[in-house]
Image (tube, rainbow, N blue to C red; front, side, top):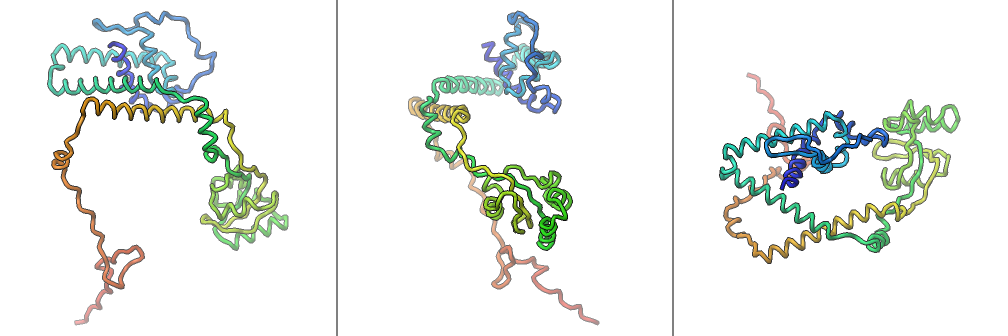
Length: 336
């Protein structure tokens, strides 16, 4: 029971850890091997106690292992470990004080304790089911072979571009490049409105087919390497493009994809196992829901909002009637 309490408390303490400032996140980055070596200490040694409760170093380390991997490194420092131990003791002393006053006998508290107990048991049972399933190498390979599209890297092109808003300006810049009076990289830095690439001389890096739209792909994947494209338009403006290198479509290697496929298949099997067991237990234990009473006790949904309509011939571009004060021209003020 003590270990269950520790695991539960560790789960409750994860939430504050997720809200730690950036400094804590930096501390959470795993240190180099030579930096994490610590002196050998007896893990069974008691490091904190209050009343009959005792916390060993091993139990503390087990609790830390319950945190997400990216946060465990934060406990490499003495201050962080001490802070965690202080919070454990704080929780324990308040719980002991509550028990001393008999607060656990309160009906509402009894309900909450029962709910917590059921959550812990639910988690324990589902974890047991999860440990009973796994995916085989054959299943992983079958998935890989039957989902080739999922692991296909699309055709790619390494290119530079200059993007401007005006077509005439784009043609003028292209003429300068053709005549050799300016360098592509210099014009991109000076004239391009693409903030992501202009400071790199228009360098887009490797662009996958389909990433920037059909208008871009038509030029980028058909242009001769090293040549300037004609000025072409996309929704972002007018481009001058220079392709430098291409990579054909390729299939990612099975060995590199195997771990992620294995995790996915195992997760799917775990879900299926839990769902199937839920149905079996539901039937075996004759669980039921009185849907009629539940419906009767549920208020009807609010009526949908009525969109005002305009008289014939006065529809606006957005399908709504103009406001009353805009539908008529103001009458001329009569002179006295």
